[in-house]
Image 1 (cartoon, helix red, strand yellow):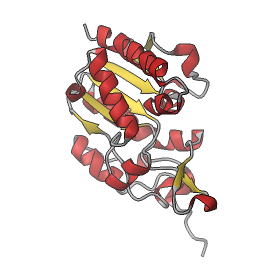
Image 2 (cartoon, rainbow, N blue to C red):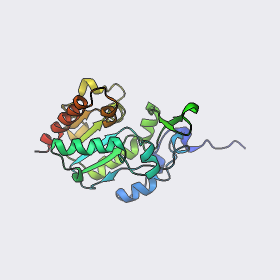
Image 3 (cartoon, rainbow, N blue to C red):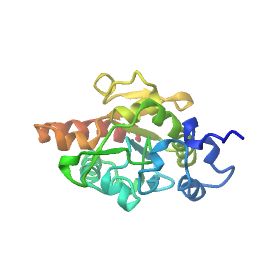
Length: 215
């Protein structure tokens, strides 16, 4: 008899979403997600975290190495940059919910670097597969403002043609929610920049647009 294809072959997380419940139910169900192949090498699912009634919901790309090991988003160096930038822009980090477009860490191992796991950007199929989780988070948190951090997050919510450099730092429309979305760079880009002060200032300025949108 022919065997059934593995769930991840469909690149669709929809079958794993719970029929009812809030963020806790969603988080528990995401822990069992097999909606794309990334679940296999990752340590665990890294779901969103923060204030469940947050006024601002921030979306990054995917968990990094530390996030994958700890099971929490934005707990590494990029997270520290983000929290400091939020505070400087006038957004209370405790009034935010942070998540990622993709919930599993995608990486590769480079033999000459020993056991170190090197970040690898998710593809469009993986981003699309994970979209049901992100849509559910947005629906349940129901924020006033969405902030997308980097290209992958922007592609998840605004389509594959999205480019950060073309659309950052202004209020953008997002479906029926109207003009409520601000795009900016991922905080990891600040850490990689040759001029960190300039890159950080740009991130803070973009987040300031989100702060002003809150009124």
